[in-house]
Length: 371
Ligand SMILES: *Cc1c(COP(=O)(O)O)cnc(C)c1O
Image (tube, rainbow, N blue to C red; front, side, top):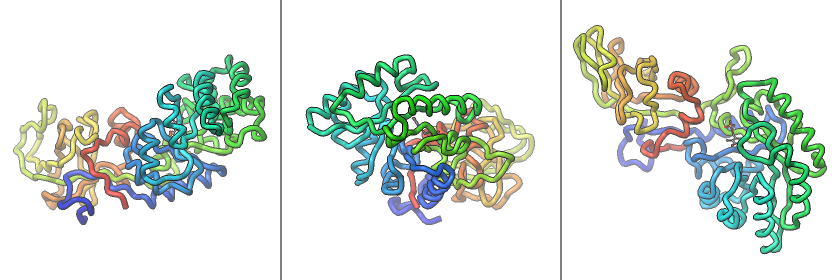
């Protein structure tokens, strides 16, 4: 592989980011949902690089979804003109800046609505907002018991243009029955406040919701994970996923040695060689976000067209793999930690984690190489 353009030399560990795959996954999501999309790009676009991902999606989606003020500012700095949506509640002192950046906030309380209303009245143009209702997530949004009162107050605020109504699904990947009921309650709630005639945007679904409950009576969906090519749930009947992984986490073999039988490998000497073993050292570790909890789980990497097992504990900067059966493995070889050949879902399962956390856990030390 050629060195990435911004590197004078080939890096030790890097993440290839395939922006064509990102757009294919977006198209797959659009076909499946049938409505408009908000692309969720919080947390550095799930570790894929916020500015590059935002630019690649700008003009192809109705909204880009962010979690923080810094993320919204970075998206604008990347030259994105399209609508940005704030997925969670805002702090009082952040609100003027959100409005200045042209961010559409979700509103989780009357206090928050009143804050944006003041800003809207001061600048003489209403702030576009979406009403967030809590139909089961327990994290944000107006609780059902308070909704009627809150809506009466919020509706009367001239400084707001409430163009959307939204909720969030806590169990779309785990509990289909609950989610079906929740979506029905959300539709009723939206209808009771005016429905599609009153709200241009009605949205509830994350990736799992979009896949398991397409449409769902909504006009907008908010996929994150699936855009990055990772299925939040296994496709039914073991079918092949139509998604392509966007990130391929790579590192290089730095050293290959033969150790005798009965030799410890890595900290704690959890792993002891049972035979003469060709041990390849690879330049990636938990300091790069390769999970330490993979230690001793039988995790595999992909090198020279083969899967080889990680042996011993994952250290901060290095891991060891057993290359005894593959004498051709040599220093300088490229190693895939996850990507097209090793699904990140497999890594997450072995690490007792979730793919969202693995992707967002890849640290800054890993250069992102966009294609
Ligand atoms: C993060 C987030 C999403 C995207 O979730 P995925 O499971 O990655 O698709 C959607 N909506 C809200 C409110 C979120 O916080």
